[in-house]
Length: 215
Image (cartoon, rainbow, N blue to C red; front, top):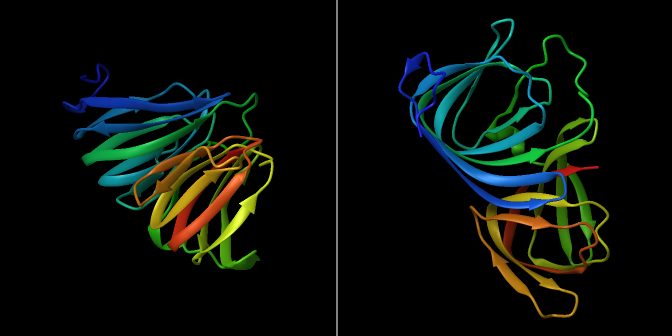
């Protein structure tokens, strides 16, 4: 519906909750062009990936952060400022609820990870695959990063933290330990692997993912 506090244009938006696990949730959001102040401090940390559209987030001191398709944006708990949607935006979001404001900057700043920065550079190896990872943001309990993997298979035993991931490239299948559930994932999919998950990854085509975890 329409945003009642808009001071530029006539923005209207719609949101679709996708899933919720503990104190974290994920969903999809669309918003038409327009702008509005966001003076109240955020009570959660939000991480979102932009499918389409362009926008600008302005911190309390006037510093602007422009973003567009393929970019990842982090709005830390405690952030406040201004939203401007310059071209209708479609995004997938992850919201993490945690006790304290962890950012120490004044003012707390929005952060944009541009598409080119999502390329991982820390090489590793998982049984049967070659991997690379990159941590893009790690403040307090919130971690955001990117990961790539070549075709192959590997097991996961008792995942230590819930992982929220968005598939950027490639095709893979996740199979539960008892084989009763198998899901093939493709670009554009959003996946939640809950803490304690045990199963197997089968990577069919080279994969690139954006991941979010919270302690």
